[in-house]
Picture 1 (cartoon, rainbow, N blue to C red):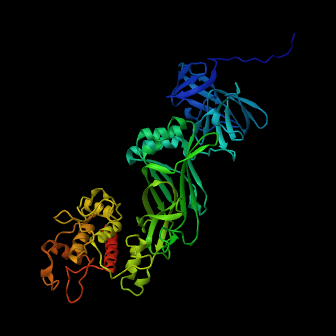
Picture 2: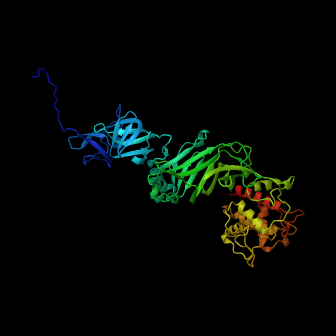
Amino acid sequence: MVKGPQPFALVYGTLPYHGTIKEIKDNTLTFTSGESLKVSSNVNVRVVGGDAPLKNAGLKDIPAGAEGYLVFGTDGQVSHIDALYTTVNSQVQSKEGTNQLIIFDGTRWTLAEGAGIFVGGNAIKWSELPIEAEVKMTVNPVTARVWRVDIQGLPNHSPYVPLPISEREVRQAIESSKNTGKVVLAAGGGNETGEDKPVTLAFGTALAAELYHYGRPVELKLPGLSVEVPAAEFGRIGQSEQGAQLQIRVTWQSVGEQSLPGTDSLMHLRPVGKLVEVRPAIVWPDGSQLVVSQSKNPVKVTITSPIGSTAGLNVQKIGAYRFSEMTRQWEFINNDYNPDTGKSGFTVNWFGKFGVLEASRTFSDITGHWAKPHIEIMAARHVVRGITPEAFGPNEIVTRGQFTAMLVRTLGLPEDPKGVKFSDMPQDYWCAGAVGTGVKMGLVVGYSNGAFGPNDPITREQMAAMLVRAIRFNSHRVIPDSAPRPGLFADENTIAPWARTSVSIIVQEGLMRGRGENLFAPKALTTRAEAATVMARLLEYRANNK
């Protein structure tokens, strides 16, 4: 018989209800027993997940698998919730079966039914959890079951990478795209600190499939780089890729001021800032991967060069280039470089290495020539070429086909021979692509007899008519027709009636001038040097009159 005072307690009210919380959705707590309870959104919550309670906790802070203790008020409603869980940080030593893992201290842990494994906030399968991964496990303190495994660090041999783009970020971006028209996903890193640190944008293929079904383009943004991928590209991931990880690896490379090899061996290519390499790949848990080299749909890439990187360079000679793995040469893409923003944008169907480069090109027969600066600018922009590798032929006459090609290239238009329907020009003729585009865009027209005359010399009045169409092309500026000012040129009566307005406009806008002695010489032919100069003026005109 025990003598002396005995411990006892008088308990008033209802005993707390407790159980393992499986899910919380719409203020409803669902327990592993199958019971559910609806609670008020402002219920008092205390969450203890380690040494101290979480301050200002709410229902959203209670993790799945926490042990919940519910206190009811006099009205029968839940007035207070205590949620307890523990965390274990360690490294995976081995896995057994489908739900048991052993950490490095030898402890064996069992995953609860419905437990989740996450990398960077994205769910992966049990089979994809790599050995030696550093993990943080959320554990129920009563049942000792693991309810969540968060991978904090991956082993060097793992084909996976920590995911900088989480499922939550993707869903937020999808929601925001209702206003912007595209899903914008941003990730830090890269060359913002001046280091050549590679970055991998990665997310599960299930999310990629969701982006495909959503149907809006996806823009991946990094410091100094953005890649806009059509939604259709994500549709290339089929059933065989399920459980894999879609990775887009971006690497920057500094090469200094060395000359890079181009398709023209006499052209000097100097990098503006760093080169960038974009390599998509689908990676499976076993380490096998499929590198995606070509896109089925055009991908838009925008490179932003750092401030000051163009110091000492001629911005008119800067363009975007892609490195060809086959020829080991840098191939020209376009001249869409904006010196005010430092942005260079282009559309490609191939991934790989890209660069913003300044080109320098000269010829042996233009030394001391009055048009030398203009010829070199337009050669650097891949608008004009030499008649031989070393000679430009500045005084040779320009043909209608040559001038049309120069015009289309100066405007940065893609050449397309589909529109060519002239009796004297097959679709495989050297300038058919430029003529086809020129006709489609309303820049050039053929003769009334159905011919184009690609090898006919171009007259100055014909050139004036083409140039007026070019300055009006895609321009917001209104340029009204105007008759030539009387006495402007002594030979104005020799200008064809159809060309008089064009001559008046093009002289007034400063793209063409007379030929001395107050003459315009409308029937005179144009030299290659004159054509290159006119193209340089057109380039400057469009830059100043957007």
